[in-house]
Image 1 (tube, protein in one colour):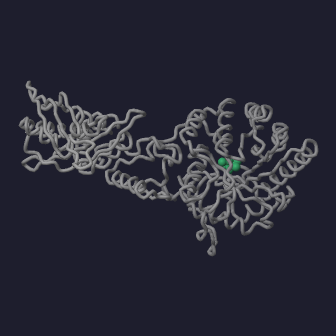
Image 2 (cartoon, protein in one colour; image 1 turned 180 degrees about the vertical axis):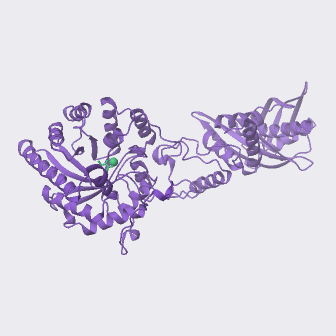
Image 3 (cartoon, protein in one colour; image 1 turned 45 degrees about the horizontal axis):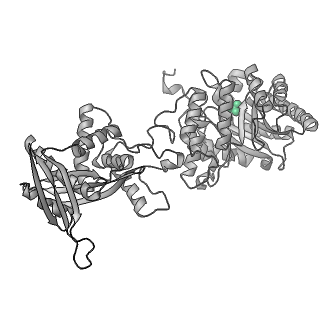
Length: 568
Ligand code: KIV
Ligand code: ZN
C-alpha cells in the first residue's frame, strides 16, 4: 500500500544512449524561430486576445524578425477563423513571412482550416494528435496503431487538399506534424508514427516535412529531453526528409535549458513564445533563448534592441506581466543591490572606458543593457545592503557627478543612513537631494558674497602668471573684505581666507570636471581638506567658472568642518 506523497510518482524513463554526442556540441547558429504566441500563448490567457490585439502582436512579431508565426487554430472558433481571414484579406502578412495554423488530426477541422487559409501566400499546416503512453491509456483507449492511423489519415487528407489548392491557386503550403506529448511517448513509437506520416505526406529531402517534437508537459531533466531528440534523429529512417523542430514547455522551470540542450542534440527549429507565456508554466521563452545566444557572441537573428517596446506590446495584448526578475526583460535584472556587486560593476564600467574595450567584460551583467535599449535605467539601486561604490555610481551615471574615490565612503554612509532610517530603497533623486543638502546648499558660517579673480601678469612671456583674489566673505553678521595673490586661484583664496581669520586647514587634494546639461555646461570641483586635528573634510562647488567652482568647494569643506565641530 502506497503512502500519500512522493511515492506515488513514477520516475521518468531514461533513454538508453550511452554514446550520446550532444554534450560535445556548441550552439553556433540560430535555429528557425517560430512564435506560437498567437496560438499556444493565446490559448492560455484568461481573456484571449481580440482581433486588434492579435493584429498588434502579429506586427510586433514581424518587426522582431520572426519568419514563421503560428497565428491560431482557425477551425477552433469563429473568432480564430476571422482573425486568420483578417490577416490574409487585409494583406498584413509580409511576403517573407509564413503563417502557421494548427489543427487536430480530424477531417472536418482540417477542411475548415483549408477554407481559413485560402489566399495566403505561404502557409504551414500544422496537424497533431497525441501519442503518449498515458494519453493512449487513459484518454483514447487505443494502441499505437490506433493513433498512427489517425495521423496517417489526416496526413493523406492534408496532402490531397494541399495538392488541390496548389493546383488552383499556386499557394505555397508546407506541412508540420506534431506527435503531441512526444516526450511522454516511447521513443521507438514516436519514430514509427513520424515515419508513417512522412510517407503519407510524400516528404522528400527537397520538400521536407517539419516534425515537431513537443515537450508538451516537461517531466524530465533537460538532458533527458536532449537524449530523446538525439535518439529520435538517429533512428528516424530518411531523416533528411524532415526538419526537426522542438516545442518545449516549462513545467519543471527548465524549458530554456531543455531547449538549449535539444538544440545541441540536433533540433533545427524552435517553437516558443515571448516571455514564456503559454499553458500552465508556459512555453519556452524565446526572448531568453535568443539573448542567451547573443551573450555568447552568436547572432540570434531576432531583434530585441528595444525590449521595453516588446514588453509593452506583450503586456498590453496579453494582460500578463513580465515578472521583475524575468531574464533580460524584468525590471530588476540590470540592477545590483549588493555592495560588492555594485563596486565590481562600477570598476567594470571604468575599465571598459579606460581600455576602450572591444569586448564586454563586465562582472555581474551578462549583457550590455544598452544593447536591448535599457541604457538609461539606473543600473545600480541603493538600499541598506549597498556599498559605498553604489551611491557614487548612481551619482556618476545618473547625474554626472564623478565623485573622487576618497569621497565614496563619506557619501555612501550618508545614503546608507537614509536607507536605514526610511527602511527602504533610495531613489536616485533622493540621493541627489542628500548630495545637494550635504554639499551644495551649505553656506554657513562662511558665505562668499562677492569676488573678483584675475591673473596679475597675464600675457607676460617672462613671468609665471599670479592669480589675484579679492572679495567679500560674510561670517556671522560681518562682511570681511579680503584680497591676496597666489600661484593659482586655490592658493590665492587660501591666503585671502587667512586674512578673515580662517586658518588651520591643509589642502589635500582636488578633482574637477565639466558637468553639462544641454548647452548649460558647468564645472564641478571636489575639494579635500584636512583640519589641524587631522580630520578630513570634503567640499563641492559648482560654477560656470571652474576656478570659482574650486573656491566654492573650499568654502563648502570649511563650512562642513565648522558644522561638524558644532555638532560635536
Ligand atoms: O504542447 C504541445 O504539444 C502543443 C502541440 C499542439 C504542438 O502545443
Ligand atoms: Zn504547446
